[in-house]
Image (cartoon, rainbow, N blue to C red; front, side, top):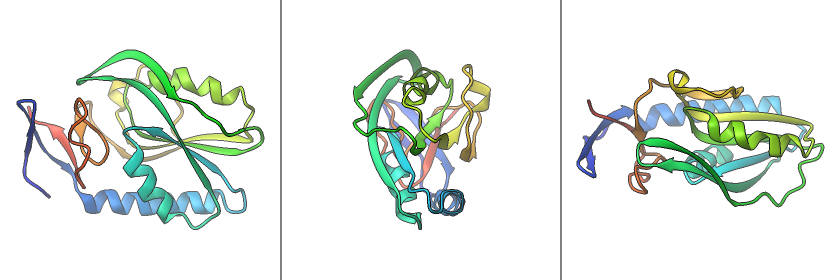
Length: 179
């Protein structure tokens, strides 16, 4: 794994290796390929954080599938602000579709908890959530996670698509804030 990195005078140390991420994504893709064979699911990738995760996962799928991107912002700095903003909307009809929401991380769960009813209202055939990272200790809102690559402690992480005030997304591994 790489060396520590510093952003905004905070030090981040290697946490999850690029190899471990790649292995988990291959396993997740195999599970999704099996579970959605013949169903032509629609993946909804939540920007910005999940763009790398979504791209890597999508390339590993061995089924017909569609992907679209939405933007929900609820972060500023290292603390969740609690604001949920839909900046880029959903322009695909979800009725009777098998839908999988792709998220980089679920910590409090507030963003998805507030957003999911908008998807449910469109009456998809099924609605599942796949996440790269889950922080169960931080979760305050009920969100059912169907597929999870890594369960992690309640520490701030960045890299592999996750940022700290816009920076740090462009690493192959995931880093966590040093104590």
